[in-house]
Length: 55
Image (cartoon, rainbow, N blue to C red; front, side):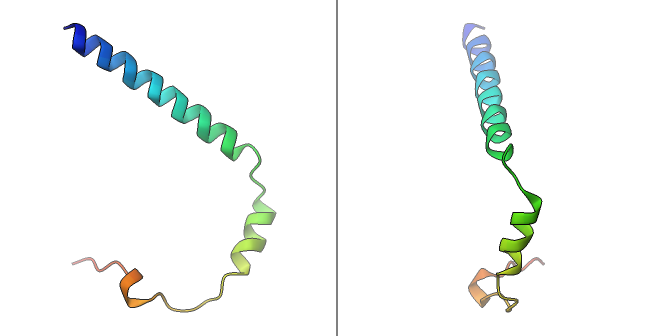
């Protein structure tokens, strides 16, 4: 039972730290800068090894 409680608390701490990390990382997100950077990526087909084949 103690291991279950310890694991539950640990998971919650990790979840909160992860959430805090992504909130901080995304707080400076600028959609215009992202669109500008994305427009600089050439529109070429993916390499064969980079494709995901489903089915």
